[in-house]
Image (cartoon, rainbow, N blue to C red; front, side, top):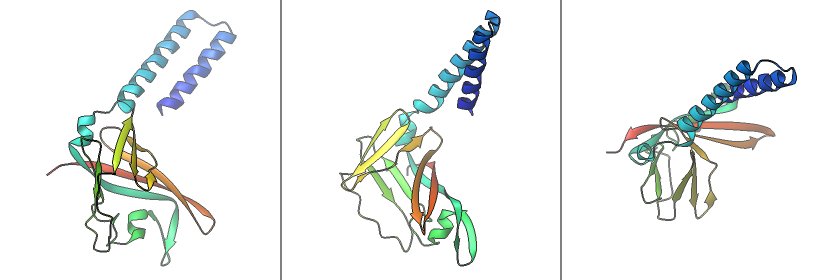
Length: 173
């Protein structure tokens, strides 16, 4: 939303300059742009790392678009589509350790996860977290202090699906 407002302000600024409007309007627009850019950078690009490492991050939702049909029912709830005993539907969690290693876990009955290891690394630049392990790296996670989101996609039967995963903090035990 802030980016849309920023673009609108830039458009008005350019229009004002081309039509030689008052300097007061231009100063107001420049001030608004500075405020939006500063506020946006402070709220999303520099999250508190203490919040990241002092919590475990539990998958709260996974939304797939377009919705998928399974057993005659169409839903956008990807956790439901995976099944009640799946890894994702049962406290699928990430923990980011201070030493740059991450761990993940789940309590799903049908969940077989690889054991955690020291080659599972995380790195954060701005508000983007990248996970790496011996298999490669992840799509970026976006950390804003209150949530972590990750977007992924896949193709099934010639349909391109997009999934947005949302993780919420829970204090470490």
